[in-house]
Image (tube, rainbow over all chains, first blue to last red; front, side, top):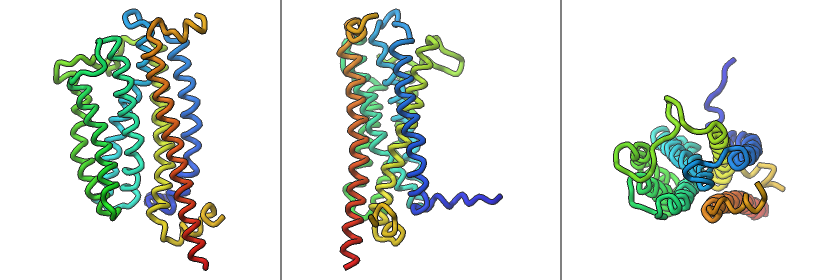
Length: 245
Length: 54
């Protein structure tokens, strides 16, 4: 059976597909958030050193992971759009930016609220925190650059360059705790295993999965609006059921 | 564990609930914005269609 892999790279076909897929990501996201936080708050034991304050981990770590991965995916789409001139790739990059910025913000916010009781400071200019702050600024810069250039194709090009160059920052965030002396602790979960309690791991991974599904659902919904905005003058948009009514 | 004990978070209530509260708020704002953008795009397209029909 021949599958046309390029069929859904056209905005007109992807628009419908994205609409059909969204609920399949949105509802499981809600369920996993609820289940993960239930385990995080009611099943996972109190931490011996950090008491109840450690429960911030169930949102802090997933949000941080998402903020980094979403940036790499954004940069990947932006690069595809730049090289192959595929419109949908650039639209996907634009659709991911606000959600990535949001997760970077949550990472910094929950980190500050965790840092205060544990380190005695809301904020320190250490490598991990500073590089994560730069990540937030990269997202905001990407959004601002796109907004400042009127012609969408030129905006895509300029912001793609920013996104690609900025992606150097992601490995810097990841390895910052090894490369520099920082206040931030290193990774607890490694390939070789972990010292983490099993319920803590389960709660964290469920919230992580929930964040992924949430991000996909929101990005798909946003890209549909971007498609409508950019393809407003095409016949297929004019003939959409939701436009006609 | 009683309800008040749970909400007290052994003295860390401000930090724990401050984290989850703001996260929830930010996610709800994003969902509202994404929905609003779609409504706006559709309204714009309907207006364009109407003016094109005349």
